[in-house]
Amino acid sequence: MTAAKEFTPADQQRGSLVVSVFVGVAVSLLFSFIPFSTVLGGIAAGYLRGGEESDGAVAGAITGLVAFAPFVLLLYLILAFVALAGAPSLFNAVAILIVVSVGVYTIGGGAIGGYIGTLLSREFTF
Image (cartoon, rainbow, N blue to C red; front, side, top):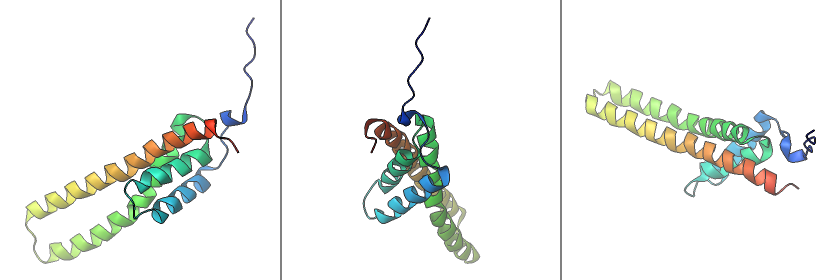
């Protein structure tokens, strides 16, 4: 006969996804002047979300995606004006490479931060 597993508060998801993402984006924007601010936002989102590591990583990735959206919108508007001026296709390829690189940095950093935040929520429960 096996003993029943004890249920601890760290085993449950503590916060809603929307609140966790909102706080994570706010932290990312607040610390946007330092490198890896999206990791800090992901840590905040993952910590507030709790649950499994995958839950924190998803919250962090969504945080990174929401923080990445204004960059994409701004770049899209800039490229629209540049395209009207007749930019060469090499310029478009470089612009797409920049967008993909910043997206991987922002969304990936948020996901890594969310994973770390979930681990921290298990260690430090207030």
